[in-house]
Length: 324
Image 1 (spheres, rainbow, N blue to C red):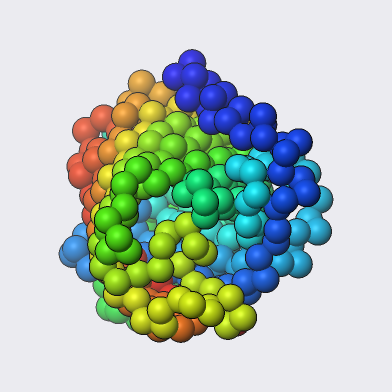
Image 2 (image 1 turned 30 degrees about the vertical axis):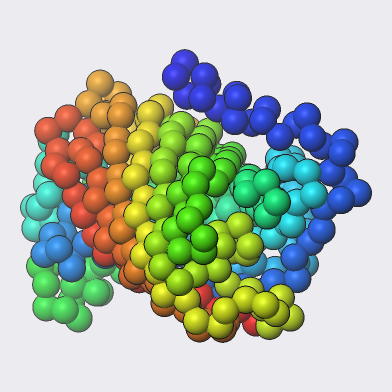
């Protein structure tokens, strides 16, 4: 009920402007690639969210995808970017050396899925709407057992022994939306941006909001997606150096990495719904350096307990972006 109460207003927000914007929207010619790698080893831990990667491609040719017909239109006179983002993440319990199920702890789980998405940005209104359709799978087919075992072998770290009890193969299918609106700006040195988001699907169902603060020498947030192709960089500073802080809160409806897939109920171990924390907070601080069409980001992420009896957790993420 709480998720539905948050999701419906978010999805209906842009519908009233659809007729006005069809002739005014434009497609950005930016061609961008972003890659991130995250791991909790930098905080000397090896549990819960333990490793993850994303590969994000933004290409104008993706405007021809039939998925765009069911994505949200966004504010009037928008600049649209079309992208596909690949996600891989792995999760483990507190002790990976145990070769039996750790009752009351987080299950082993991993997934791979792709999100076809569109962002619609109004630089004048300082507003952006992003919506996307996700599809992929959760379970052994994601290959996390072999990946983590090999990495630990190379690092001479303890061998994970519980992957045979991971969440079983199931489909990932979901729809997500996020709206962002500038609240405050002080010249080009400080920006405060409010966010609201919702996800409805077999992997994650939640609704939430957050506050993003950016400080430093930077291109305005709603000017582009952080980088721009050469033809779109006219008038923009080549060098950027800034810090960001993001505070988020979520109301959690379903999390398949702990509760198992919706269709395949044969997982050897899952957490009951009563053990899932329904309110979760997350904080992220980042430092970003960019020059022309290249950017590097390093981030530290903290998250509150996600299930009964669990701990706070933290990890580090590195990101590289290239504009062509």
